[in-house]
Length: 214
Image (cartoon, rainbow, N blue to C red; front, side, top):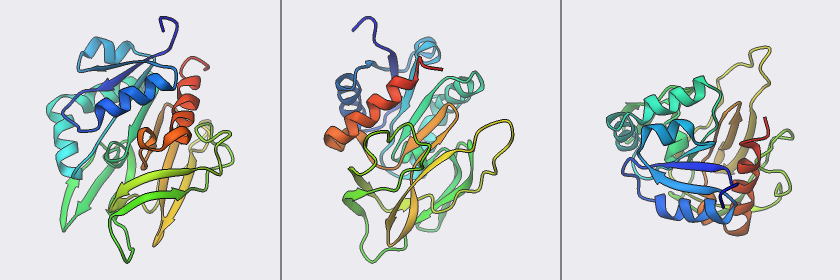
């Protein structure tokens, strides 16, 4: 495993970290659960897990200086992958039960409650990957595992030359929402790759394959 890309899994108190580490190892990474600033900065990739309420996750990231670590990596073009609420907090804000909380502001927009007859959205669902997606290469027709009641239902970031347009992958549950975003070094999934069986492992493997490719 010494030649495998090193992926730091940000340890800031989130609940699904051990399953994420196991999935990354299965996908071919040298995965390390850590809060060490040096390792987080130097790793080939950083995975940001997240479960629970938007405000709690965003505040926990700030209290542990995770927001600064994410920002520094992105400023240097270093890959970051957010999962579930770890994706949601990358947006400007989230509104849950009337409580609007600030996010990390990497992407414009607000995470809101899904307009669906039954919540949470729990279980397997198909997605519609962007034709330019690297995460979903070879797994475009697979199903992925979701557990959430809130999501990003719009994309507000305008393409800016010379940077390529983000690859946006959508899912529909009641109304369309973003299932994944690939935006330069910053990627994220609303679903849980670590709970999505072989398809989730292949998606993580696709991401890991990009860490030393550029």
